[in-house]
Length: 542
Image (cartoon, rainbow, N blue to C red):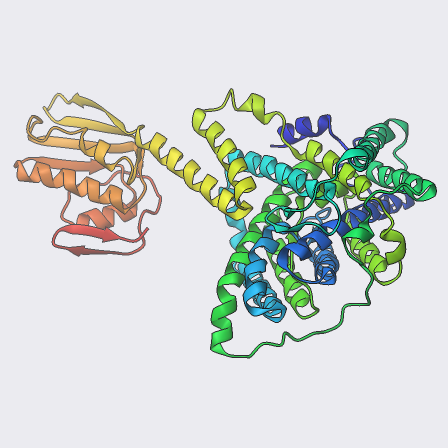
């Protein structure tokens, strides 16, 4: 993954390469971290406002969530350099809850969502993210890059004319004529500045240079283009403690629990995949359970301070790491800058042209999309190529959680099918006249039928030996298949010996009346922890 991402980011990198570890906290390093945080904070503003509109809540609800979630996860999260805040993946789930029950139920749901995420971290459920195959990760990266791109298209609409949709705002009146040309020109200039800046200096993050130069030019020359303030006013005070005003009844719990489960799952999946992606770029590992707990704590606190909750944001995380952010300082700085914008600097921030922020996000899209995946898809098995395309398409059409689940299921089925075809046997007859079957390949539910077809109870001699030295008995279906074969030989009046089975297989199959030959080199792996025998058929947990 790391080689692919480095190759994918080579053309669209936001700044020159930096030390992946972040180095020691020298004054230069601290300055880089703070400037990276400022860049991220500027990019967070329109995203938080847009996602608040999607969820059907006040813009400050999104901004407070971006501040609180961003701050707590920056301090306690599992991966320095990650940025969290209000996201569209969560907002599209929240909109139905807000529309039916109101914003107070949303706050209560976010609190419960956070508690569920904390429990996921305590029970170390984050480790299961390792089951996500590499093709699914590629589809995730490509899908989110496309989603980020589509979300920026709403900025090319006349401010105030759009309505909430899955990827931001839609249904509004599109810019045309000179306003559209001017908007596109400023986006192009911003992207050009971001591309050129690393070649001239690394003293300032390239995205910040792009935003600053374009903003100064627009304000100085009074260029009439959409600005941050055209989306909504971001001015407000400090977030204050707010207990969700909902009835403390079982009926309320029934309402918010389904939403909380979905939000918790989506938030953790997106956060843990982003954690892996950032880890590949920064050369770090681990921290999945810690990230779950941090995300849960952040959402629990956010729900009590009037925020809409959130999770990791791949776009802003890419801006941060590509701007040089490698420690927790950048994430903390981003959150504090965002709060400063809300409380003090709102009038100034509202003057920033949206075109500059769109240009930054377009560069994020270029740097995030795994361009090498087109070449890779011609070299990998067809199933893996289809998984990459499928996950990308489902991420864009629906949401990340569904895409990842679909990708994992398809990959698992493909793996099971490929392994099911691997079961075979080498057979020979000993000088004493016994028939030996040397089983090769895993024996599990997918290969059980193929296993049964390897034998010839009617034509084999009176003694048959089945050797599992080159196989592995994986599950209860495999044990049942072994019993079924043994029963056929018994019915034909012939003896069968089972060799090189693990101790638990010995126990289970011996109790079922089968003959097992003990060997010093029997394998030691667990197939079942509990069993029962009814009418001669083995039933075991695994």
